[in-house]
Structure formats: structure tokens, C-alpha cells
Picture 1 (cartoon, rainbow, N blue to C red):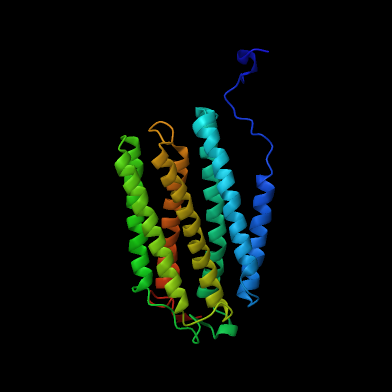
Picture 2: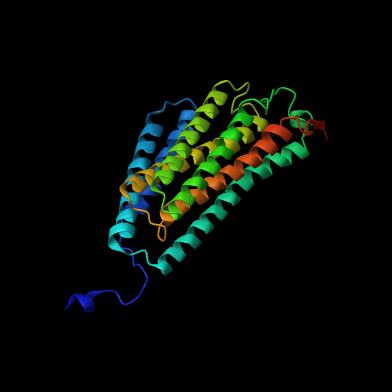
Amino acid sequence: MSETHAAPKHPYHLVDPSPLPLLAALAAGIMAGGAILFMHGHGWLMLAIGTVFVLAVMAVWFRDVTMEATYGGYHTPIVQLGLRYGMALFIASEVMFFSAFFWAFFTNALFPTAAIGHVWPPKTIHPFNPFSIPFLNTLVLLLSGTTVTWAHHSLIEGDRSGLLRGLALTIVLGICFTSLQAFEYSHAPFHFTGGIYPSTFFMATGFHGFHVIIGTCFLCVCLYRAWLGHFRPDQHFGFEAAAWYWHFVDVVWLFLFSCIYWWGGGSGGAGFES
């Protein structure tokens, strides 16, 4: 059969069977189980193994998608449209994910029960000052949103230097955010098991911090690909998806800062009795 007859006669990409989705689920399960054991004082070995496993699966999966997009020519315009819909739906699912934590927080903040003395924050809790590290982190994330936008516009304009510098600055700012949050957690005046306030606080802000770490990894891959010259002004959805995700992380943090650190910490009017 000639090469012409063997070529696909449609613009869609039929993905080859792969064990990566199953391996990713297994790796995520190990990491989640390790995180639970770690938070209950059973050591960090399983968490470390799960984290390395997740990173390894991510690396192989990113490599395969990069090969398909850059060298295989499989990401036709209609495939890219499907990828955009997929990323949009993924971010929508993440919105629902964080909505659950906000729901739990507001339920207890607006209707504090007898178990916590009918007051929010509970009298035993000393919340963070929202205008110290949390406000600094807000500035860091907002600045990172501008640098990733700068990188995107540089790519569209064909400015490779601006693309690389913008991405590198965004990654540095993401690392700064994570470092500041780790410092904040290490000096927290309350612990995860200290009641409903610490539980909702650490779940919401901790999962956001985890998303920042994932987004930083995503941008690191984009920086490496940009350095290799994989992105073009008319075909760069890998970078565009990373930028969408990063802006989503920015917006979620604005809600976290406003609702949980400022309002929910008593500084904005939530310190009242029911």
C-alpha cells in the first residue's frame, strides 16, 4: 500500500493505546495515601515515592504529547479546538472543586454552631494577619499573572527573548509564592486537627498551593519547549493551556485572600456571634 493510501483521511487524532492514564491514577493514589499517612505522623516515605512516581508519569506523558504536537503533526486545528474545550472543562471542574471548600468555610463562618461557641473565628483561634505574608503573596501572584501574559504576547509577536524572560520570571514568582506559603505554614498558630477553622483553612489554601506547584511545573515544561523552539505564533496551545491554568490559580487566590484571610479571619467583619 502506498504512503498516500496509508495517510489518515480525516483531521482527527486517534490516540494510540497507552498505559499512562492507569499509571497516573496509581501514582496519584500512592501520593494521596502517602500524604494522609504523613499528616497522621506515619512518616514521609510513601508520600515521597508517590510524588516521584507522579513526576515520572508526567514527564513521559508530556514527552509523548510534545512529540505528537511538534514532530508528528497530529494537532490539527480541529484537534486544537478539542484540546481547548478539554482544558476549559478541566478548569470548570477545578472551580467546582474549590467551591466545595468555600462552601464548607462559609457554612461555618455564617452559621457558627454551639461546638465552636457560636462565634467565628472560634475564640481559641488566632488567625493570620491578612496584610502580612498573605498580602505579599497576593502581590507576587498578581505580578506573575502579568509576566505570563507578557510571555504570551511576546510569543504571538515572535519575540523569543521576551517569551523566555517572561516565562522565567513567572516561574521564579511561583517558587517565591510557594516558599512564602511554606514559611507561613511553619509559623501557623494553629494545626490541621485543631477544629473546623484550621481544617477548612488548610484544605483550601493547601490545595491552592498544590495547584501553584503543578502550574509551576507546567510552566517549566513550557520554558524548556520555548527554549527548544517548539512554539510558533500560530500553534502553541501547550503554552496557552499553561497560561489559562496560571490565571485560574491567580483568581482562586484572590477569593482565598478576600474571603478566608481577610473576611473570614475577623478583619473584614466575619468575627461575629450567631
